[in-house]
Length: 369
Image (tube, helix red, strand yellow):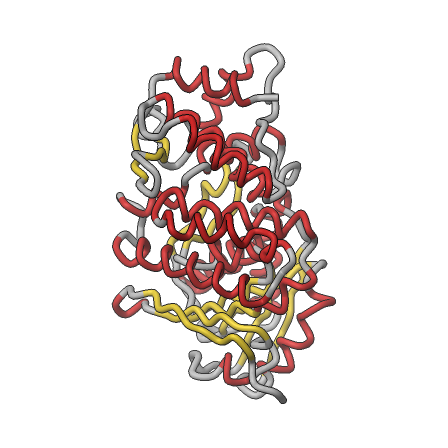
């Protein structure tokens, strides 16, 4: 067995809940990637119908040296299944196999699998350990890191969940080779996000290396994943439960979540909605004096070049802006019915603030197809 290549690590510092993110090519098959995890008799791999045929057996074989029994549960694939019914399939598997409170869960898949596995781990017997094994770019740079777990409700995205940190995150870059082009673009949306909110040098790098990222060049992907995780680690380490600073990681998400809920979960990928949401957020930032028109054009051009939509969909033929506002008032950042947006207070600086409805309506009208 050859050693994994391009292996790097990012540390999430959260006192007794601290853990490492391991990034590299060829990690999935290596027992070393899974050593020093909590000891248990059994492990449960949670995956979906798309990822299971590609990687489930390999992970099962790698974990066989660590656990006497390695079970697998295969969920249906898609954001539309991120609900109570699918979550119960995980509990059914845990109870059906007689899993105890030391059983370790492994989330093998994208953000939907990771969120649901984490929520199941937080809930089963009041908490069992779990490991994130993200197989999409979006999950590797965002959703697998930081301990947010949730399912969707018909009225709002990620509204039912818990903060629950994994024991480890293992990002095998080789899994990105089988990622559909649309999913890769969706992940690039979350990569791009980190530049405007925290690191303009990283935004410069993304612009210069976008073609390498789209071609899945290993060194470029390794840098993108590592730098994204470093920025998120810095933010999460200061604000684990999103009482302040961590909210900046939701740049583009308030508009984006409204798009996802308004169209029906799964119509647009999460990264597509966030990419378009960033366009809307930067337009609102410009109207509030945070950035100039040149920066709006720059960010919009990069999001479009990444293969993401930059024109928002119509959610209501009668009063489209009212529908957006209705959905955004359910957002977790809203306070007393007042929508709180993550906006730019200059390139590389983000803040959370309210905005007049009239101004938000202007943005929605200007950005919608």
